[in-house]
Length: 86
Length: 272
Image (cartoon, chains in turn orange, green):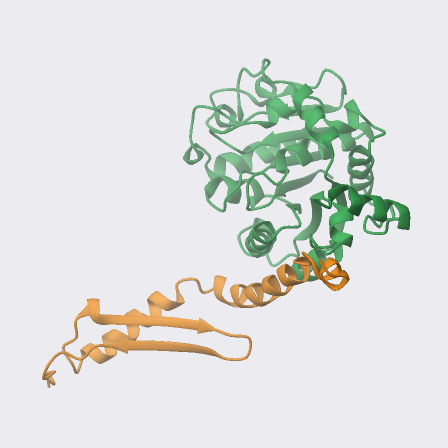
């Protein structure tokens, strides 16, 4: 083991601290709206379902949080020849 | 004016019950009238840590439901006259605690005691929210470990939203008690430092309890460490924390600052 390795070994505490800071910054904004994803999914689907027949099981809602940007991804599989209802 | 203090953490096994017993005893040793209340319905342990497990007749649930009068359920400590325990029920579940009933018991306790120290169960469900519901201040117990710190942050969020005080728009006083800390490992970067946890959680530090075999010895014997071994580092830290809660200006010992030799030998001792 080199002398450099000896000193760099097992300094995991700074990693723990950084991971927590990143995670908690997001969780703090989210916990007050813990039902946000379910709510968004319900409301967005209600709007789309007005116009297109969609299968509720073929909808994927994802919320991805990064340090700078968060993305909301709603993936709706359109059925073959989706019928416009009105 | 009585103070209601909840000792809480979110995560289990971080030292809530031990800290509740030790802080309660330390406050009583400082001459205050103290009751420690176990809110962990179904999994009571404060009686055991206080050494009163064979004296439990009635419990919190009995009093909440009106089956027993408060004085019948209170167990007076045999070592300190100004310390009492209100045990939790071992056979019921958390749904037995109603907000109205708990509020009534807390009001009655406020008339009899200076300090009402509520030992919260782990988790964030009804037992934990009932324990914090009527609190004036909170001690958040955390270990310098990622899951404990994350859960503490969640509990801090609940303290700021689900308590009576928060709902009335009043400020909830919160203090961090860092337990199972190891200054030697923190100095080597293997464990988060006190400052790291403080930075993340952003609440003031009440004290640091270093990992110590004395703490286990005290709970083995059913005697709060401030009584059993008052000169131990853990007991002194709990006593200092209690004095701080009483409003005395107590400097928090800088646990991470160790001498060169102790750091050297601390490191040597654990190199494998």
